[in-house]
Image 1 (tube, one colour):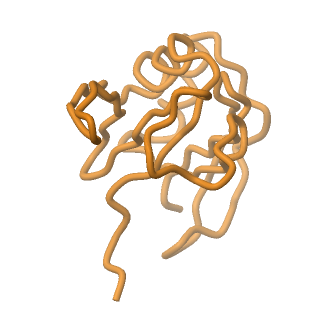
Image 2 (cartoon, helix red, strand yellow; image 1 turned 45 degrees about the vertical axis):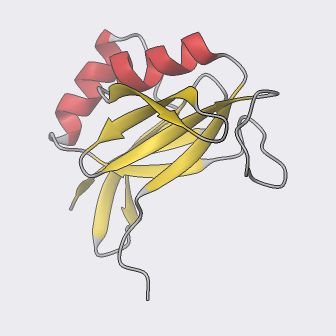
Length: 130
């Protein structure tokens, strides 16, 4: 029945810091779009064929999660570049790696990962296929 993930929603307490992390540090593309009723401008981070829609705590769009809170996500991304380059990019951005590289089990095969926290303290795993 389910084929793939289209998007997920991230709730932030600091929109500026969140946009900086997902665009500057992770290299995602910021997209603005009009959505909802009434129509309002919204933001999302695009990568590949997916996106992360952005909600700001206290200004979420309806419908929303039952308890939308910053820092509740644990996300794993497969990198488009080798993990050594990911590590170099994180170091150049002065973004601390909290664990890794370590071997893990991904959705389809073994992966090699590093872990960081975004500005809302969500756990972000960045991986390459092993």
